[in-house]
Image (tube, rainbow over all chains, first blue to last red; front, side, top):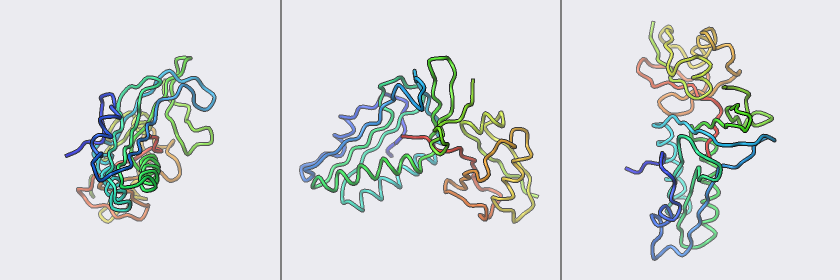
Length: 146
Length: 81
């Protein structure tokens, strides 16, 4: 069984190799990296946590839906634990017969991951404070933690 | 009465100071009843109006019925990706 969550660094090339095959002429990869700023604050690192069993289950459902809708193959990995600026936090690779399906499926899969997979992010800032990121809040974060 | 264990994650685990809390509800209770019971626990007053609850790893609504062995989780706003 494939695990979509990983505590190890994500190898995007290896992920793409999983879905590459002679009949698939188009491979699209998307990598989401840890950026050094958020809502006007300087970010030094972050920590991801998850409701692991549900996250695996939801990722499998998203991958399955994309594969049947676009007749493609999809590979996904999401990091957990502590990450530094520039680390790959999430990667999506799609292999399809042609580029339209590959681009569309990749875009849909990353959007669905953000919307439905139970993963949380606590950012750490240069001033030593940290906060839970809340994409639904006006400033994109909740002032919390220490 | 039925004992329900509720898993907590991320900010909500911090609010309640625990990764799991237990709530006792009358048989036939729904997710809305569970949320009301959670609000009166220490830390529960800070929950938003309509928190995201998963029952058996699927998104539930206030009207979702609860059964004794359901896996229940209270999920803060998702921030993956």
